[in-house]
Image 1 (cartoon, rainbow, N blue to C red):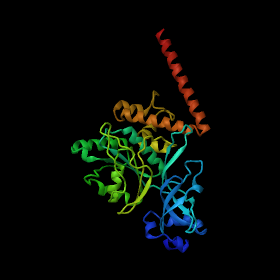
Image 2: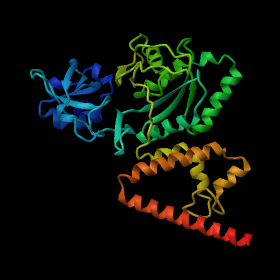
Image 3: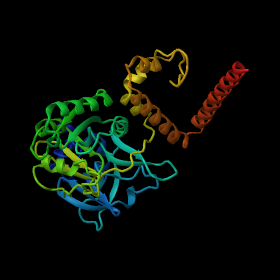
Image 4: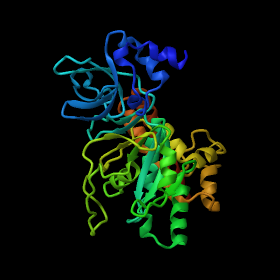
Length: 374
């Protein structure tokens, strides 16, 4: 279907303006929306959600809509920032979001509840920007955690090291970038200074081609970065505590903002907890070198702990693989297995079987050791 025929499937009242197109509307979204257009509903994109309502940008501008019809018990199925939705035409009070279109990508983390539910943070994202402040010591394990979720979402991750002006020595800065690159194989790493404008042109070029979401802890400089990309102070900025280099939550909701150079940006609140949620594929991509080494292990179910013929442990011994990387990999794999096992009975049984197998091996080893000491 051509661009003209896709658009003509919508009634005149729902034809997307250049404003809506600038928020990412395209022929594929038009095709997906056609059944809702036939019902007289309008297309729009969710800019923010709070207190049972949301701001939606449409061809006619931004409107406030009720989310009562798109607030199910499943937190993965609630409407969220970045969703493309079908809203009531003008006339109804209140106007409702009736449904949302199938998501192309979704950034999901586990909730803090003991039920191991997932929480969707942003939808239809092309680039996941992990903001990391250079004002504090790098936490490579946390960067790996963010990247696992980013890869799992279907978006292309990018690590942005903010506040680069605080590291004036170019050699030191290069070493920091290299450390992050080692923890982020296949992921671009960019150092920027929003205060001095360094690196912003490169970042703006990257995010101009779609939807980007800004992720990171409080104090990572996300709001400052958002303001710099947008070219005006649309996001509040708060001072960083001198004690620990952390900031308070400047952003309290997830906001979708149009960028002057093209593309849109979703700014998110600082994330204290970044729990994995069924992110096995993402973990595998973050630790691609370990997954590749594992293919050379003698046993296909090698746990890379003490098994003979383990290619991963051999890489540790030779210095090819840092011990920290393997420890971080093991931690994220175990965490992800626990989350998945709580909702997957078959996997729970497999994990219990594996625990018993390793327990038996350990017991046999201890008995053999005692026999050798007699």
